[in-house]
Image (cartoon, rainbow, N blue to C red; front, side, top):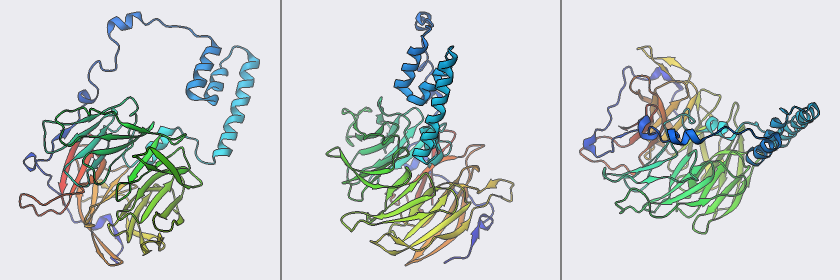
Length: 451
């Protein structure tokens, strides 16, 4: 085990140089005009002229709000009644309804999209131009979701960029490529999960087939999707549901896997497929074994806040994680590969906010973790500072050594929105790097950093 570390241990003036276009990586920059074309969401002058304001009666407004938003919001509208009796009765019923809802749910009564943003791996998710990134595990194919509810697929062919868009695809939260397929992508969003099949040999930008829509009761919005290692099953989590759902996508059927006390925000299969991790919107998270092994579930609780992000080593023997309220990187070591048995977690690195020699702020509460496929480089982004901290990690059996490697800054005032490593990076062009970190910056550009 390495010595206790903090961000002051980073070497001064550490920097990394990104790939250029000659390396055949797509040049991706999203502009406001590209995502929101002028007039795209505006009414034309001729249309605006025929739109006449209409005054609806109170009962009609209440009914419309009830059908769209539910009972409590409809009662809120009823409190505006000119009748003192109706207004008082609606206020009283609304107060009772809110208290009953708080007691019944026993978890924060926040709007769904506010909870999505709170537990998202993407910084400032609601306003972020780039909402998530995902590399295909086997081939050179990058999926990028943007704020306009569109997912674009980038390959080595710059002339063809498939675009995935659907009326059901709103508020994209997560992406996951299906293993051992050329172009099957799961997209978690407000309405559930969409499964797209993108023909890898197609020369058109729009898929010929529509997406398969997976939904189940109140299991929406979906905030996490993860494929099993063999690609047969898909597990999903929703901040409105206390069940994890395991889908047989080919049959479009699902079964509840685990029911926990609070709704789940994150879920992921481990790399080898023996274990699974699921975190709730509270302090609890769970480590589980999955079939065909005997199904077990071990519950853990954080000291402060909820699980914000985590990263597994490829052999599943080491688990790193950060929480929403602690400025530390925590470490857990596996004691039984197929039993979900981990030793007690302890802090590995102090992430308290500091200033570099140049006066730039680094560190603070962590936003996201990403560990390269070779378990060599760990990237940590932060909620309130603009640098990405890169640590060099060395695994030897059940021991881990971690050392500061470099800091990555953007251009000007931009900060990292989301990031991921390329899964299938192959060394080319006499490059000395072993991994490529892909970063979606707040300015709308995507950059690739060899490590």
